[in-house]
Length: 181
Image 1 (tube, helix red, strand yellow):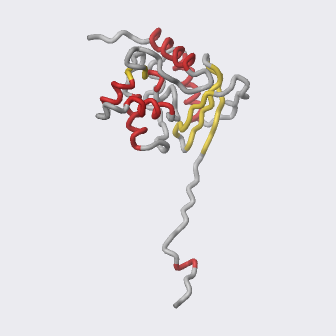
Image 2 (cartoon, helix red, strand yellow; image 1 turned 180 degrees about the vertical axis):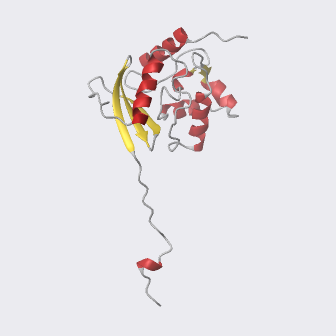
Image 3 (cartoon, helix red, strand yellow; image 1 turned 30 degrees about the vertical axis):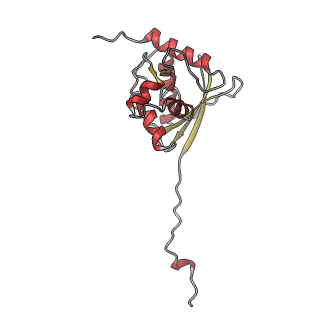
């Protein structure tokens, strides 16, 4: 039997380099951590109020994202339209849920059950809630727009949880343009 040399191996190592950038911004709801990966927004994290701010010397892409968050909190319903977001994380089911969340219009809500039915998974309301909980891009992928069938808030992530969800829904409902029938 002959010996196998490393150069004979059919397996090749591939190095994947990513450009990652982070910023911490102040918002009306507290500090948010933003992470950009290869030019796409990859994460939004609710941070403690004492997290140090970090937004000096940002790339043009991150500066644009910070501006979009400022516009959103000023009531701009289209602030996140066309924003490049990372879709690396999540199971296929979670990604389906997150796509459904992005289709909920600004200032409107849907129930967990409605999202489940939309995805042809009528018994999956709890799974919808779990997918929302795993959403790496809250606010941008608007899991706060999902409520219970009886109009209750359900749950929400972040250090302030339901207080933040209530504030986001109030912001959007106060700035939303009434739909025309």
